[in-house]
Image (tube, rainbow, N blue to C red):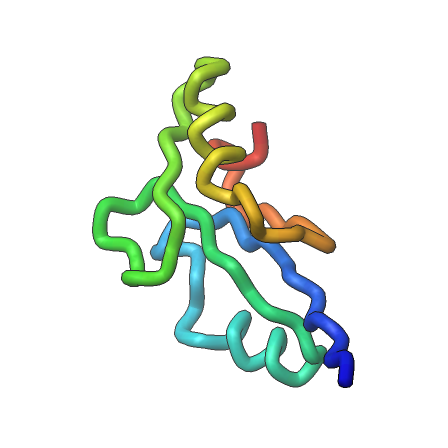
Length: 83
C-alpha cells in the first residue's frame, strides 16, 4: 500500500507578515504541507529559524535545516528573506 506524499511549500516570511492563519488554511484547502522559515525570534515552534544577513554560511544553514524535507514550491513574503 503506497500513500502519495503531500506536496510541501516553503513559506519564507516574518511573523508580522502572516495575517492570522490564512496561509495555513489555504495550504490545507490546496492539499499541501506548509513549512515556515523565518528570522523572527518569536517564531512558531515548528518554524525553521534562518539568519537573513547576506552571508553564504547562512544560506548553508537554511539548506541544512531543510535536509530530508522535499520542497515542491517556495513562497517568499519578505524582501529580506528573498535573497
